[in-house]
Amino acid sequence: MDRRTFVGLTLALAGGMPALAGGMPAAREARPRPGRTRLILLGTAGGPRPRKTRAASSQVVIVDDTAYVVDCGDGVARQLVLAEVPLATIRHIFLTHHHSDHNADYGNLLLLAWTAGLREPVRTWGPPPLQGMTRHFLELNAFDIETRTAGAGLVPLARLIQAHELTEGGVVMEDERVKVTAALVPHLAVAPSFAYRFDTPDRSIVISGDTTRSDSLIRLARGADILVHEALFPEGMDRLVAGAKNAANLKRSILALHTTVEDAGRVAQAAGVKTLVLSHLVPAEDPAITDRMWTDAASRHFRGRVVMGRDLLEI
Ligand SMILES: [Zn+2]
Image 1 (cartoon, protein in one colour):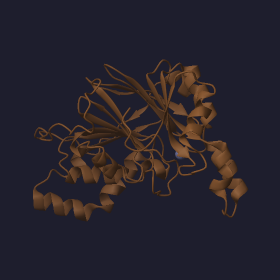
Image 2: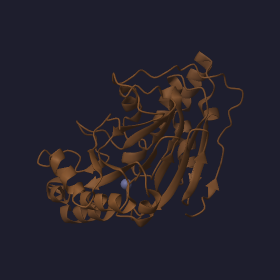
Image 3: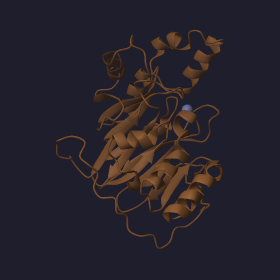
Image 4: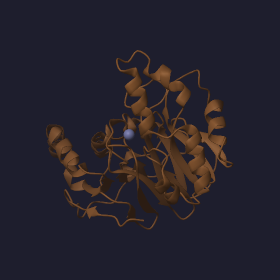
């Protein structure tokens, strides 16, 4: 594993913050929690165009009621609310790469969490220019932030955010609940792009981000309990690009950026994971491709359990 390069511009350090008064999240289902670690898929669509049945890419790992968000597609704050995850419990945000279906609501999540009771520092992690994006977002929303800070006596939002840029794989952060490790994954010109692995006291969870079939992802995911892998269904590509001006080029570029669902199964098998979760689905909405078709394709080369991703699914 490559050593992580830490470019840790601290936008602002929080000091002497009062303890969080968030309380426990409400139970989503009337069943006991199996362990300390929960994984909830917040958005499972691939691509930035808003859709009716799936939100853009995002997921949350919750350990002992502390939330670690991976990617911030459109509507991530709303999806967290629907999943009954208090926004004030977010402590870390990880971006896999800077495509808008993964980062469009990065700043909005921070801003909206702050209005919803966030009072403790949040550390954010991702490729450059994460620090510049964070700074510009705060400038863009300076009027609202200043108004609320003065009116409600809130801690200025900038003091709560520490943005860290990652340029190499390796251990990203570690606390008493989780160790997070990143690996560089290939996503054409969108470099660096990362996959993240969460090792907690009771589970290991890997999020692929966007990638073509990747050996570094296989190494990162070795022996994990869960691999959430992006997936593309090749037979749906012609319908997806139909009507586009440059349909053939568009199809070629989508295929070159992503992993087919069969290859996601091959990656899961090579890594020896227990469960493969299909997410970041391309096409995201195609009634001609049933859930069964997705899972059958993934199972062609994977002997473990395959889960078809859907928004708000807890695994
Ligand atoms: Zn992407």
